[in-house]
Each structure stands twice: as C-alpha cells, then as structure tokens.
Amino acid sequence: MLLLAALWYAFLAVFPEVSLVGKSPGQVWGYLVTGPTAETAREAILADLRITLRDAAIGFGAGMCAALLVAALFVSVPAAAQTFMPVAMLLRSVPLVALTPIIVLIFGRGLTGVTVMTAIVVFFPALVMIMTGLRSAPRQAMELVAAYGGSRWTALRMVAVPAALPSVFAAARISVPGALIGALLGEWLGSGTGLGASLIRAIPTFQYNRLWASIVVVTLVSVFVYAVVGVLENLVLARFAPKAGQD
Image 1 (cartoon, rainbow, N blue to C red):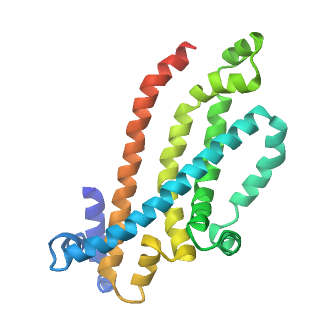
Image 2: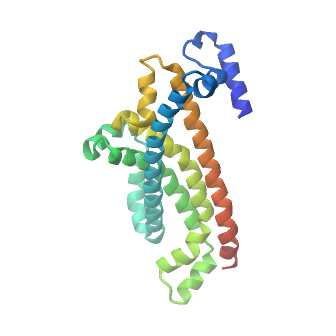
Image 3: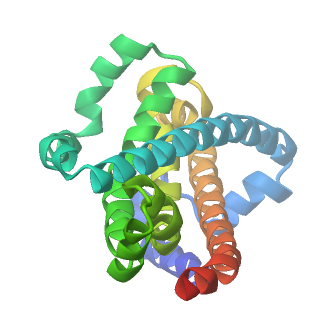
C-alpha cells in the first residue's frame, strides 16, 4: 500500500497537467475522513458500495457454481468437452461490452442482467482452472474407485474434487477482482445503480474527489476480499489436503 501511495504521488508529480482531474491520497483522505463533508461523502459511497458488493457476490456465486458444474461435466464426459469447450472459448474471446446490449435485451437492466454479466467474467477463467485441477487427480486413486464398482461421478466426488481444491481456490482468488469489475461494468452499462454508475456520473459533473475516492474504496475492498479468500483457502486446505493426500 505504501508503494502504491508513493507511485500515486510520483505520477501526479511527473504529470502536473492532470492536477485538475487527478487527486492525491491526501486529498482523498480529506474527502472521506477529515473534510467538512466527509460523513456525507462516506455515506454516499458506502451506499453505492453495498449495491456493488451485492451484485458482485451474486454474480461470483453464480459464476463459480456454473464453472464447477460444467467442469465436472466436461471432465466426466470428454465428448461434451470436445463439443462445447471450443464454443466456450469462442464466447470468451468476445468483449463483454459487445455482449452487453444482448444481455440487457434478454435479461433486462436490473439485478438479473448485472448478475449475468458478472457471472460471465467469473465463469470462463474459473472453468479452465477447475478443469485443470480435476484432471490432476491421482490416476491410481481413480482406478481404485472404479475397481470397487464406483461410478465416474463417485470417483469425481471422492477423489477429483478434493484434489482440485487448490485450483478451485486459485480460481476464486482470481475471480474476486473480476467479479467486482464485472459488477461495475454491469452497473455502468445496465442497471444504472451502484458504484459503476456513480463513477460514470462523477466525470461529467466534475466530482473528481468522489471519483478517486470511489476507486480507492473499491480497490481496498477488492484487496481485502482477495486476502479473505486466501485465509479461507489455507484453512480448508489444512483440513482437507492431508486427507486427500492420504486417500
């Protein structure tokens, strides 16, 4: 954080022509904490932040659950992966901004549309990482389950999923910032609520203090949630990874 603050100050010093638009960490601190209107500013930003966090959480959950289910299907049924994985990669190459009008037309401008846009951002990277984790399951353990009459789904549940836990949490860590970005984009282009919409409204109305303060707040929240996922990963892997290794 100190390095980021130093780079922030250095950028404003090297490019003084952006002083009208660019705000320093001290100015953001004054706007949010010590200024005469700090309480009002915090309440406005936090109100928008709550909407964005709700949108990001729902989209993150939907995207991760879909990635888990589809990855399990693709690993268990190779024909499905060969058929639909190229289609998924093709869709992934299409910019979300280009898909937004279609998503808004189908799902509307409310929470559902934002959830779909956020889930798309989360889904594709998580799918690839989770599939890699499921395919890394020990072959001997998978064959042992089959030898005792277990189905492919039983082997997946008992062996592959525990072995894929590191990949699942790695996908979750990567997807957390992506979910916030997807929620901001969905709010900007779709619902018109939350921080995504307020960031865009702040530019033409010259509310640059609010703009920078909102960016700082959402960045700090993203870093915090990323760290929380890392802590959960350590706790879960400490509980299940040794057991998976014994199996």
